[in-house]
Structures are given as C-alpha cells and as structure tokens.
Length: 409
Image (cartoon, rainbow, N blue to C red):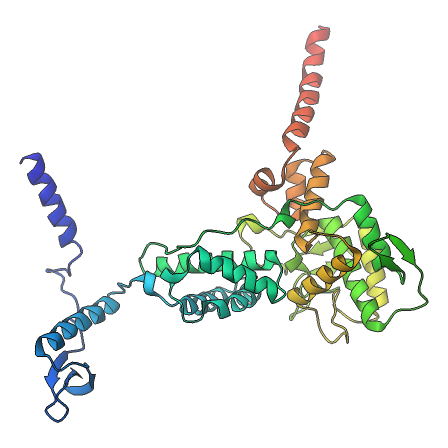
C-alpha cells in the first residue's frame, strides 16, 4: 500500500471509530422529531414523539426541514455529551463547580463558593466565548469599587479558571479560556518589617491611638467594645501568622478544643496545634500537618483561652455566639492596616514573612515545610530566595568534618 493510501486508510479509521459500534450495537435516539405544517397559522411546527412541541417560526418548507435537521443533530449531540463549551453559560459553569466542590467535601468548599458567588454578578448572561481581556479588566475595576481587595479578585478569577477547565474536561472538550490570567497579587511577595510588626502589636494590644502621618501615639482612657474586639482579632492573626505561617483559612472555626462544628484546634495540654481536624484530606501542595507548639506559643494561646472565659472560638464574632468567617476577618485586618498606614500587607503576607524569615535564619526547607504546612516545591519556587546558599553552607560544614580526619592522617 502506498504512503498516501495508508494515510487515507488511517483517516478513514479515525473517522469510523467515532461512529456507533456496528457489532455491539448502541441505543438509538429515543426522541423522534418531525416538522408539520399548521394550516390554521401557515407556520411549520416541531412535533416530538407524535405531539405538537412548538412553532418553528417559518412558513417555508425547506427552511423548516433544514432547522429540523439541525435541531435533531443538536439533540443527538447532547445525548452523546458532545457540546460546544464556547457557548456554555459562565453562570452554569460556576454553579456546577460549587456543586462539585461540596460533593467532594473539599475543606475549602465554602471559601470557593463565596468567592465564585462574588464573581458571578459580573458573568450574568455571558457565554465563555465572550469572556475576553476587556471583560477581565472591567471585572477587576468593578470588584475593587465594590470593596474587594485585588487578592480577592485574583482568587476569584483563578477559582473560575479551574471551574472552566473542570467543566470542559467533563464535557470531553478542550478548555475555553479566552482571557489571560491576572498577575499574582503583590502581597504574596511582600515581607512584614520588624518595625511594622511592632506597630501592629502595640496597636492591637492596647488602647493607644496611632497617627499614621506623624507616626505618633496618643494614649486613650478606654475604647469601645467593638474596637476592642477588632484589635483582638488583628492581634491574634498577627501572632499566629508570625509564629506558624499558616494560611488565613486555617483560622476559620479555630477553637481551643476539638468541635464537631469547628475546624482546627489547639491542644494546649499536649502543646499541639491542629490546623485542621485530624483525618481531613488536604492536597499535596496545601498540606496542613499538626504543629508542636513552643512554650511561648502555648502560654500566649492559654492566655487567650482564659481571656475568652468559656467562649470556644479563638476568633469569635462580636457577641461571641460563633466564629468569624474568613471574609469578615479579612475586612477587619485590611481596615486596621489602612488605619495604621501599612500598605500592601494582606493576611497572606504573614505566611510569606514567616517562611522568608525562617529561610534567612538558616532553618532547613524540610523543617519549614512541616511547620508552615507547605510543600517543598512551593518553598523552592515561590518563597525561597536564600535557602540554596544556606543549605550549601551546611553541606560545606559537613564535608569539612568528614574530610578532617583524612587530612590529619
């Protein structure tokens, strides 16, 4: 067989394999569609399984037959799960993703749902093919005007991109992503300075007012209950972020004892911080191992428990009837940073700060990964600016020790 004949035969085989099996047989389509003329109106109509369905909207017989044939092909395509994802409703994609993450019982399901719902109003009536870079820029501007941070917008777009990929894969189609991924939030690259941390700790632990322009403190006799609660939340977020470098989502539902309706918890008797409930499944790049607490951390959190006087939540709402949600904690933190004149410090900045400081102090990457609950690859590719040099120093010292006796001999 000549080369061209071989290729023609191959193309024919590839086309044939897409057809229903001749030997095994496959279920024929269950619905029968017809086009019938309505003499009383003069229009042609669709008939489904012998019953009138709806008007075709044309008086021309050939046009009616052409539309019927097209409709039948579309029905057959839906039955075989053949879809054009370019024309899929963006809102449908979000709804499907929300259902899936809850069905899979992902730990971040509630966060994914709330973030996608914030994005959903900007997708109303749009198909995936209509989501270009102009749409992305308009959505960013609109969400910032609505009071969302850039990092929240960035998370929403990335959750949506994942939703689109999963939706298209389920439909046996290539992903439809006609808009570019926005640049990562700058807050992830920022490190909190010691001076900034000192300002936050003084503000959150006392009554003093701070003038961000003059950087002067003014003593106050007392503050309101709401203000005291706000400072308490910021102070605890700061301490845990600087001590453990956990993701901010770990703080949602955090308690002093294990609870059915809670998340992670502190076992102060054993000095262990459980970021999530034991047995909770986490992805390889978002590991959340338990952490052995140092004595200072145990004392600090024990003081919180005494201060809270029976309230089980580490981050309670104002009336202490339940835990604060992640979005509310973010708002409280961001408002405090704006009041103190500290720019670009989002909650995730504390995680980067913890990991960066640990690397600069020569802590091995494996130890950092276990404490912060992050993969080694993430440390190397995102956070690690100095670890290679520190590891080489350790290696050189070890090599010197191993070769010293040989030199002496």
